[in-house]
Every structure is written in C-alpha cells, then in structure tokens.
Image 1 (cartoon, helix red, strand yellow):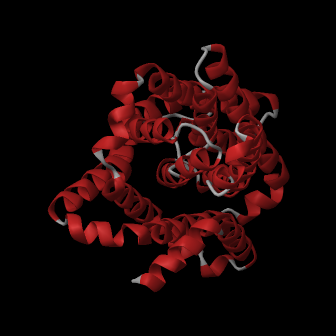
Image 2 (cartoon, rainbow, N blue to C red):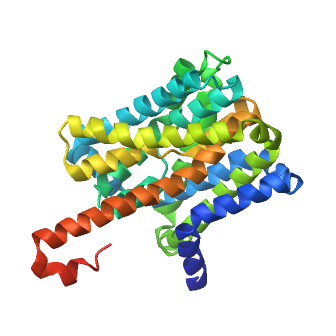
Length: 326
C-alpha cells in the first residue's frame, strides 16, 4: 500500500505531463485509444465515486460560516465561464461542434484540482472545497440549463437528457462513494491516498480517447481551439478575481474564487460531448484538461511566492519557521 501511495503522489504531481504524453500518443497512434471512447462515462463515474469517498461534513461548513463568499464563488463560476465561452465562440466564429465544446467546458462545475491549487496559492482552501462541492452537487440542474441558454444557438439541446446524464455520471457515483465511506470508514481512510492515482488514470484515458477519435478535426482547427481554451481559462481567473475584489472579499477569498472560476471539471465536458453531441465537441475539454493543469500551478506558484515574501517582510523574526510552510 505504501508503494501505491507513493505512486499516487507522484502521479498527482506530474498530472499535466501524463495528460500531455497520452494526448500525443492518442494523436499519433489513434487506433490504440479509440476503443476507450465507449467507456468515458464509466471512467468519469469512477472519478466522481472517489470524490464521494473524500467528502466530509467539514467541506460544507464554509457555506454556513461564510455564505456570501460561497454564493459568490458558485454563481460566478456558472455565469462567468459560460459567458466567456459564448463570447469567444462568437468572436472567433467557431464551427458549431467546437463552439458547443467550448460552452460545455464553461458550463461544467469546478474541478477538484482547484482545491490543491488554492492551497498552494495560499488562498482560502476551505472556501475552494465548499465551492467545488456545491457547484458539483448543483451541476445536474445548472449545467444543462446553462448549456441550453448558451449553446442552443448552434445545435438543439435536450435538457432532460442532459440532466439525467449529469445525475448518472456525477451525483449517483458521489452518493455511492458517500455510502461506501459510511459503511466502510476504516477501509476508505486507508485507501483515500491512492485515489489521486485513480483520477489521473481516468482523466488521462478520457483525454487520449477524445484526441484519438478527433484527430482530423484537431488537424483542421487545433491551434484555434488551443488559443480559445487558453483565453477561456485565463479570463476565468481574471474575472473571478476582479469580481470578488469588487465585492470586497478578503485577498485569500479572492484567490480561491479566481481559481474556482477558472478551473473546470473538463472530464464531465468530454463525457457530455461524447454522449450528446459530435465527438469533436469533446476536443476543447481535452485541451482544457491539459492546459488548466499548467496554468493553475503557475498561478499558485506566483501567489504562493508573493505570500511568502509578504510573511518575511511582516515577521522577519519568524522567517526560518514560516519558510517551511507550503
């Protein structure tokens, strides 16, 4: 078990590298990965099941302690990211399948990686966890509604089918994870450190499947989609930060909300695209999965270093102690 834990930690730290590697492999050797496409929903369910096993009551305390900040984080996430996606799709005149894919990413809840990034950025980690959990639990309603509002311009959207898909791929696995945790608490506590490895394998497999099945479309629109995804992510960080600053939240809250707004559950976007739209619509989700795991750590490094310098300036006598804190 100790070996698995070590491998899991390594996989978590090098996640972006694995996503890039298997995206490249999926592109150049598509026949080896297209078969995974039939299992995307199952893979996402496994990831969400793992999330359910890690949820605790403490994850929701922030909602009752600081409801304003949580409300702002969740609402900003479901307004800012879809709005940016829609605007970029219009400005760059994206093909319908790609525009739908960009909006799908924007309509998804926060990604669990955002919690780690908020911690490394010295943001309000409790707020980040609460926003991720609540945005995920609300996703069966908010994600389909947002997709209908922003994507129906390009393709017909079946809200009922989307609600069922999100509930089946997100809520049901999370609920089952919670049940398993209740009845097998000791076993779950022992295995929880291995869950990052499961998540990495799941997301990497989804990305490889999407890239391999959409190779021709990527050749046609790859650089354009990559540029749009980068802008989508960066504007999410920026507008999330500026909004929370304008609403006079604390600096640590501003950082957490910026990260929560900018980072998405791109696995869900890929699964919904594959299930309800053209497989090409999953390409923005695959690229987003890779990119936000690069931009997030870079942003966390900047904010983390800035916080460390501020601590040294304010408390120079405690420099040696605080320099060891992540």
